[in-house]
Length: 133
Image 1: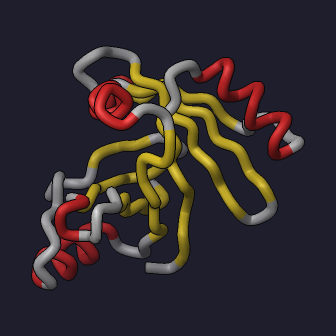
Image 2 (image 1 turned 135 degrees about the vertical axis):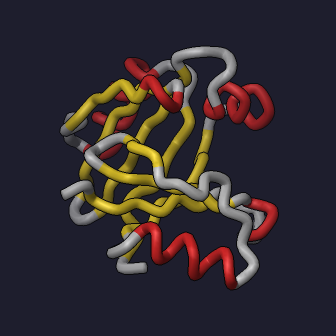
């Protein structure tokens, strides 16, 4: 893993949260994107070298909707940038981590993504991200 790619925050209302984070970070989101496959609409903010992703559910069956129902708004995941996502999935599976999606999926911000189950990562949902080239 190269670095923390972003921190994902689940929100109930993306537009209201955009206004809040614009004030907090003193900048506008650089990208807003709908990811239908994951039932989510996202906004991305850059603050120095750090990236924040806001996530709003687009349907009640999406993982974000279920997270919000159970936990309310807040940090949803930490994403790590990886060089080779398929190689990293195999390595982490061999290390005993539970991979939620063995085959990387297209995610937001031009990334391939895979998730590790929080039960095997100390209670933190981990996302692996690889830039699509």
